[in-house]
Length: 145
Image (cartoon, rainbow, N blue to C red; front, side, top):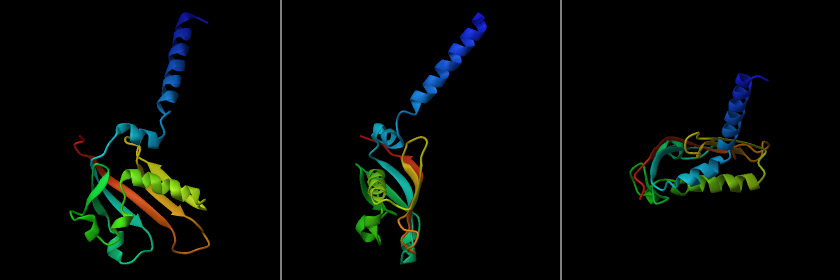
């Protein structure tokens, strides 16, 4: 093998190894490694829920890993406030649902921050209207202490 081919092979091998190691962090590990505790996001619940206002997109303000405002109001003033989560709580929600062995689920994670952007669970395809999903969009990091 001539020297040019050897160098090219070595560089390509190193590039492959480097790319493989970069994905060592799981999405959840990536999220926690960033240590973000103050952020804003739009969160929307997808379910067969009433009233209809419940499933409209909500702007969630998170400070110190706690939901502080939902659409500019104290959480308790929002219908179903206990169903709107921080990112950490969304990871907990996912773990709980996965332990319940859903018949179908789909989760998409954000490439930059690792948080779940889209979550959908159908626990039993034989039961109508028990599916639930969450969508997170418009994520913005706020000043962290």
